[in-house]
Amino acid sequence: MTRVLVTGASGYVGGRLAPRLVDEGFAVRCLVRTPAKLDRAPWRHQVEVVRGSLEGPLDEALSDVDVAVYLVHGIGAGPDWIAKERRDAESFRDAATRAGVRRIVYLGGMGADDGALSDHLRSRHDVGRVLAQGPLEVIELRAAVIIGSGSASFEMLRYLVEVLPVMVTPKWVTTRSQPIAISDVLRFLVAAIAAPEPLSGVFDIGGPDVVSYAQMMDLYAEEAGLSRRRRLVVPVLTPTLSSLWVGLVTPVPSSLARPLVDSLVNEVVVRDTRASDTFGPPRTSLREAIRLALGRTHRGEIPTTFTDADLAPFRAYVTDPHWAGGTELLDLRHVTTSASPEAVYRALSALGGDTGWYAGDWLWRLRGFADQVVGGPGLRRGRRDPKEMLEGDFVDFWRVDHVDPPHALRLVAEMRLPGEAWLEWVIEPVGEGSRITQRATFKPRGLVGRAYWYSIAPFHRFVFPGMVAGVVRDAENRVTR
Image (tube, rainbow, N blue to C red):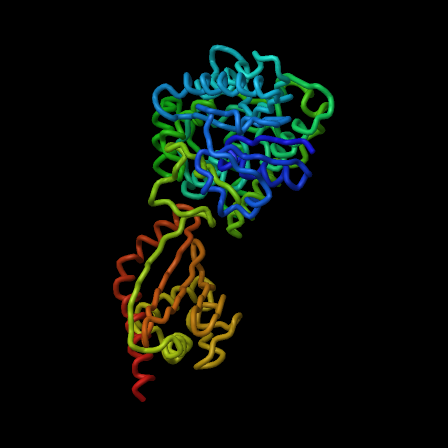
């Protein structure tokens, strides 16, 4: 059985490649700086994990390894990150040579080797050359923009398009690139690892479509069901200003956005067919890649994200959500009561309809009227049953999404909204009483969605505290009756 060492296994690509290799029948060893980061991975028990880093020592990690996969990236890791990338590549190459490794497979970045290459791409190419200077087979796969749920490039694209219906953009939005789906990246990596004959060299890998960044934005808007985005291209928006803007409106920090934006200035297009001739052509179009990434994002099925890497620049801002599907705006309330979880659940099950929502009734009626005006259900539907909620029931302009008596209840909004909204309650026993967590969640769609949330946020102080207080009163009254 071929033994494969995956470096960077806790990162975006490595965290998806390792289980893929297991499924393909390889013996997989993972080199990670923090093994605990793999504990939540469902494939953890199927691989061998070695604690360590490229600084060494690497003897244990490379022992009895046939193929080593080099996925570590030092982008933005301190002022000397380019020099560090070179030192790490030299150290890894020499250790792999001593250990008798047969082949190194390296995932780098595409771009023509000329003076206009960005620092990011130049360092990616330099790492490949350093690895190839030894006696081992080195297969360097050079990719352009990688499209997949949770990738930095996809999240940057997603937020820019969703948040900004009108964008002032730099000239690099017209630069051509050949984006590739993460599924095709993984397929090329596996093919390079499994290649039976001796093989070395540089292989450009890209998807079937050559597009500008502006065209990528348009495709994303179409797949996300958004209106066509308007752009004003100006020549004065420098990469520095662009990266600051990206850092402001996306979860990609400016320190990471800067090298990514710098690289968008370079045309990254496959210039020969060597990769397709050797490993087979790519299978996923850009439109399908965006559709798949969006689907995973909306379902919360994101196995890895760019923030999984250990480098500080890869960490999302604390104000950004976890990667269960876009920005989440939240109103969170906690209360305790002497009422039992059963009594609390019965009180929650009576919300809406004739009972109402306990606080801000005129605000609810106004919102219901506004919803009817724009074609929504408003409050006119009422309830199927005044005391019981079952999954699928309507409750005014809500729908019962989940019930777990007496522990949890969740409603999903069916009113007309520039986004998606939920009301959720979790009930925990505390002694003879209960602790109630009330969560109002809104996932905005575009800039209009964010404007909507912040415009009604002042009214939340009247509605949401009063709602949970009314539930407590009702529950406690049920106990004393």
